[in-house]
Length: 301
Image (cartoon, rainbow, N blue to C red; front, side):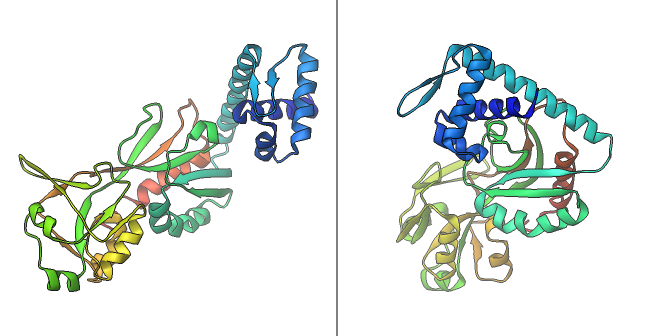
């Protein structure tokens, strides 16, 4: 198979993924007209129509879907073969594409990535901060860091650390408004609410066999947890937050933890995950082993 035929396959797979010539062109960094010509050339070479074209979408035919599946399978086999050969060198090389949660990634991953690069000079990293669950296989990620429950059981996961939620406020706020002693006391306090919390606007607590929930209210609701932490530091109210998000603020006394004898719903684990496969590229294995060692004793605990 020559270079032009490989280009045709790349264009075809990009079209199947995006169902749009323009978007496919962006994906493989080619003009939409080039993508269209390459798909047409592939159809002419195979003697069958692979996609149906309209003004808005490009839809794969039944033959196109079958062909796409076979091509992906073949490419996956090539990638595994390359990974297997790379393993024999004992040296991590290549570009490693990593997805991390936005806030967690900025605080705890990005600052230490230079250490990984120093230990593995043959690897370059593409780091994407995103508050969404990326599809590792479809989007070409080698590895991801995830918080909480793992929805995709096909992924290969390793637990890095535990995290929990805390109830925090500034010393000035607590001096002015008093310290809540029970979850029910929060009803009379200004609470800073995270709108993406699954139970919003309820905060749910557990102590032994006792389970209770409180519908909190307050002057600020936001979809960004860091914004709420900043507001709490400035005395705007009480915030529910992850322990990893407020490590420095609790250490230097800008925030105090209250209701410490209660467990807040939402505790969980932090994982590093990778796509399934028989072979793990050396670059991926090197990162998984490295970050597991880095998080053996998390600084926020």
